[in-house]
Image 1 (cartoon, rainbow, N blue to C red):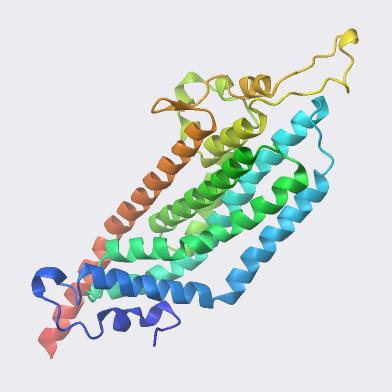
Image 2 (image 1 turned 30 degrees about the horizontal axis):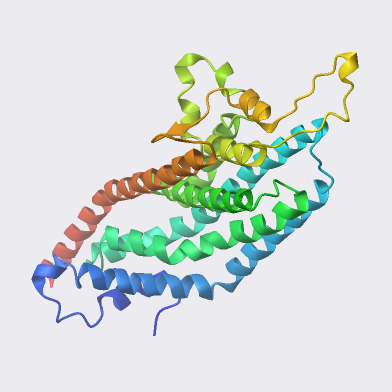
Length: 331
């Protein structure tokens, strides 16, 4: 049977592989394909057997969706609603980033202790482990944003266009995937799970400050205007704002223009005020440009996490291999 915990992974991955040709195994107990398939299956079983985590993700997603839907259920498309819509959109980015980032920190940090030992015994390569883990846990990571987005979108009364709803769901899932990758990178770079938990809030707070909600990015000193590009929330927030306000007409009924009150008549004016320089990538602009940016961010942050993990593992693996040789000589 497949073991419930990672502690039994080495035996299951390396078991029954004596027939593998040496040219395919490259010093490991099995070929890369077999390593991937076994780790993938083990990760799937362990992920879906953890009913507490699964139920917790579903319940928390439904709770926040219903809670926010109740608070923002009376939003219209007048002048007062502009601030409300912008505020709730930014909270969406915070909610998805926090929930998925901190969900990784403790679990991955504890798992790495066992994984390093299994790798030292040549049970499997880091590439097979990392890729199999990512693919196996992807459905689990998507459950939260899919449930949350499907409920809160209609309760709040966001842009009714079908393509806007689909884009909203895609952006939320990309935020979740980016946050998971960031969590893996932070954990890989930290000496312990406790250190990762202490470091992550600092990174998230900096991302919030550079997200474009609390300060207009054009107001930043020129020397640090590149920093917001490192923030998940900056790209996610702009994507959600563009998706919500692009092409939308706003009412002026709740303001007195004859008394000099300013009336913002279109959603495009809202976008221009928040983001003077719209994102353009590969000749694509608008919400699709932000989706592409988040997808690239997800790829890059996972590559960074992998490289950090590979580099930080070398010392441990070398010490473990030397220890094995000494034990072999003593026997």
